Length: 111
Image 1 (cartoon, helix red, strand yellow):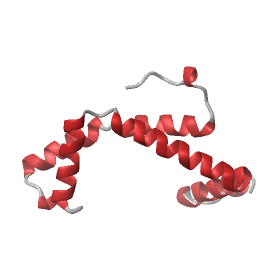
Image 2 (cartoon, one colour):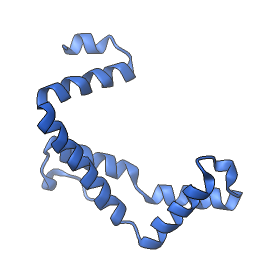
Image 3 (spheres, one colour):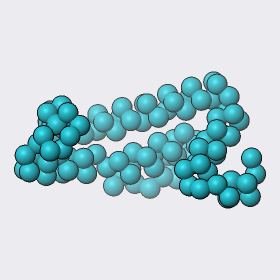
């Protein structure tokens, strides 16, 4: 699929088309390797968070059952604070760079 044909698609369709093209190019073994790299980076990122924060985040998420109104106002604030501490943009950036094969010395320092 060429860039001009991708340009005509809207954002979600464009991203999906690009992913399909990339997956076809790397094949099943490459896809498995990328999935492993994403899982490994996510695991390392999760383990970099202090144990008490991870435990509290897990507790609040279980208690909410996916519905924020199941938490008190103070608990919702605490949950927001803990989710911000996850530094998800950093995880996404590092995972994408890792999957793309960009060497570590080219990355920005951790936030």
